[in-house]
Image (cartoon, rainbow, N blue to C red; front, side):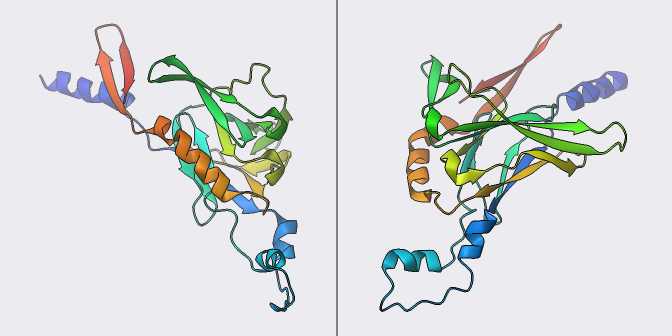
Length: 227
C-alpha cells in the first residue's frame, strides 16, 4: 500500500501546474519623455492642450494585453505579466487596437482576429543560444500579418495602435529562466488609455475565470477547461 501511495504522488507531481510567468516591461518612449521634462509655462497665455503636454503623466501603466485566454493591464511600473502556458520560449507579439473573436460553439472562442490591419504590426520574439559565447538572447524581428487575420496561438496582444508602441528589433541578452522576461517595448504619449479601456469593457466577458478539470483513465489523462 505504501508503494502505491508514493507512486500516486509521483504521477500527481508530473501534472502539477507551475506558477511560471511571461513578463514584459512597457517603458516610456525616450523622446516623448524628454519633451515633458523641465518645461516652463505661463498658464495665462498657454492653451490647455499645451498645458497637458507640459505636465508629465505616466503613460506606461494601464496598457492592456492578452495572452492565451488571459487579460491583464500593465501596473504602475509598466510590468505586464501572464501565466506561462508553453515550454517553448517563442511568441508572437501583436500590436493592434481592437480584436474580435470567432466562435467554435456558443460560448467557446475558436480564435481571435485582427480587425484593423492598417493600425497593426506583428513581431516574432524568440529565445536562442549563441554557440560561441553560450549566452541566451531574445531575437525580435517583424513579420507579416496573417492573411486570414487570425492571431496565432501563443501570441501576446498589446491593445494599442501600432504607431503608439515601439518594439525594438534585434538582439537582447537574457538568462534561461522558467519565468520569462521578454525585451521591453516603448509606449508613446499618443496612446489613448480611455479608448482602450472602453474597448476592454466590450471583450472582458470573454476572459472570465475558468475551472480546470482533469479526466483520467488507464491510458490517458485529459485537461478540460470549463467556465
